[in-house]
Amino acid sequence: MKSRNGSGRSKPRTRTLWITDPDVTLDHAADTSLSLIEALESQGVACDRIDPSQLTLPTTESARPLVEYSRIYYRVDPPVDEAYEFPLRLLISEARRLGRDPDRWISNPPSLLLSTSEKLIGWELGLAPPGLVAASSSNLADFCRRLSSKGHRVVLKPLHLAQSREIAEAKEPSLESDLKRLTASETRPILAQLLLPGVETQGETRFWFHNGTLLGALQKRPKTGGWLINMDAGSTLEPASPQQMVRLRSKTNRVSAYLKKHRIEFAAVDFIDGYVTDFNITSPGLLRELGRLTNRDWASWVARRMARSLRPNPVARRQRS
Image (tube, rainbow, N blue to C red):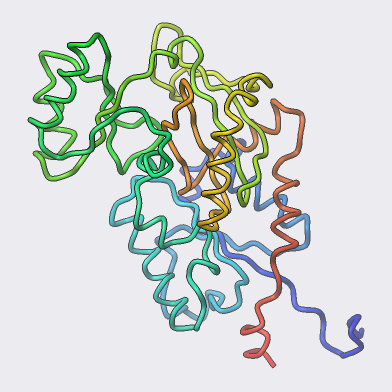
């Protein structure tokens, strides 16, 4: 059978590689990466998936050469440590060897993933609450006590973790020991930040973006009587109100401009009391829940945009010919 272009060759299929956490650790019913893979395959795009331990360079006979992929999606959850960074650095090295621009071949751009902390992007935009980044226990303790003396509360956040892991409120009498533990004896900076009172009454608003385009928003509420947002520990979800989206429009427009400038394909940004409190660009989640609560198949919507931007890899076509 001849292809549409009149030759005897079949039209090459666009192929993508997804690097995610190991299969046994994924929540298959809710995982955003799996949702996007399913929707993208329905658009005729082939999607292979591996975990970081399966990445091998040069590729073995049993693995498809990386050159055959039009795009690679690196969707590994934090912590952003050596286990997270080394596979990404291997991909960057391979991209350069193949003459590819790593930041255009790999999503999200690896230069950004390796050069910033998600919890600090709000500072770049001037949208973060008052805070202090330091490894010095004495400097952090002074900051916490200064805010406490004014009637404020402070939250302590590791910079390399996500999903509320090891986040704690700064409290006496354990403050000094907590700071020693979180900073790994003053070898690892952390973020001490004003604990915004609105988190207890209103929760936080998550905005989902694709290539800088705002899809929609969810309201995440803490477990009754608490302030920590953790979807695995009793926090709840509901659609964000239209009024909340309007109130934050000027700020989400600034976020959108930042995402477009840095070519960030997937992002989920959390707001509390009008401040950016988290900026998820490693592996933003809750896309299925956004679709369910807003009655919109956002995974398919995103997949259609992705499919339009993807083309069969010309380098791979030349190697096969």
